[in-house]
Length: 112
Image (cartoon, rainbow, N blue to C red; front, top):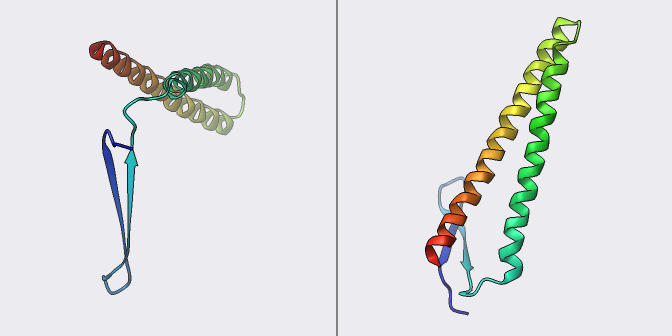
């Protein structure tokens, strides 16, 4: 198999005195022809993960609106910050998946 590129990951373990105990090398070989299964699986995986993130965006927004109806101040504060945290993470993931898909799509269009 001829590698298209090689990713070399070196893991070096030391003991208490600072001498090298062992080395571990990992080489990643990518074939020249990507299979259709992997090509389409990546897109499907990105879309599914983006839809899960969108679901959690709606869940976080609903939780945020529900937190304003709580009577107890402690429950309100905890639910409010939890909802904002859910919104922060899920919107960041949505933008990440969208940007990743756009970058790959542009790269595919430029190579054709």
